[in-house]
Picture (cartoon, rainbow, N blue to C red):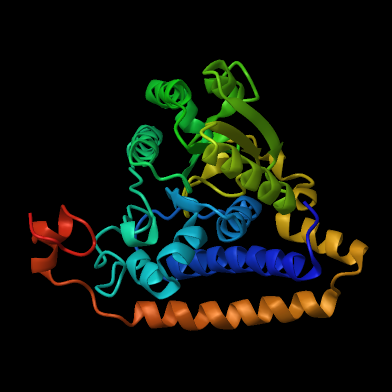
Length: 331
């Protein structure tokens, strides 16, 4: 794919947006303004930004699941204000402040359920993709990103197997950061290239540099195109998790911290800045301008969210809110 200047500048803006949102999340947690275990995507911005860009630049109707490291992508899907209010458990959140970080469902925005139970999302996403095919939806696909830890769950392989047998329109994306919570990849898998498990289920697959935002866009667009032709496929995007599993997790207890040596050469933002400089697309002044704009945007959005009211007790006990869709339809 040949990216235009405007597209490259947009991709850079997306990268900075994702980075700034995660920096703000960390800032608010350590400032005591967000409660709970939040899982930033610091170091993995190229995947989040690349998926956001691809979803908005494909001719297909993309139904998608979220992950615990795709806050910015989910915010883009359901709306920034609603997502941030949800993140802070405010009543103005997407699902009334009950779901928190990523247990969101917003079917009118094509956001499918994502479970906190490891490995559950690919089977349910496969079922939804199958329903699209059975329902005659010829221009709709499902994108199902998840982490490398899920590949150790048997029903993820079963989902891939069923998807391959029945040729359902789904793209599986393995966000491989090498750490399943506190477990390094080599402790849970004898193979480094996890996409091979998808190939063993009879589908096409590939592995890419998940820190290269343009590579993420290109692979995702191709994967969505294949899925739309009823060729389920899998893309492994290799990246690096900078921090602990969640903000405050002391990863030095269980992780070889030598991974931090030379980490800047893998930084998705710095790498793309270097690319844009080499191509003569942007300069340091432009980078500073974008960062200032995103900081201003997100400073205001976070403050707006934190000032919103908390849900009322009766909302937490209302089964029409807790157990049905976000429109609150009666049971």
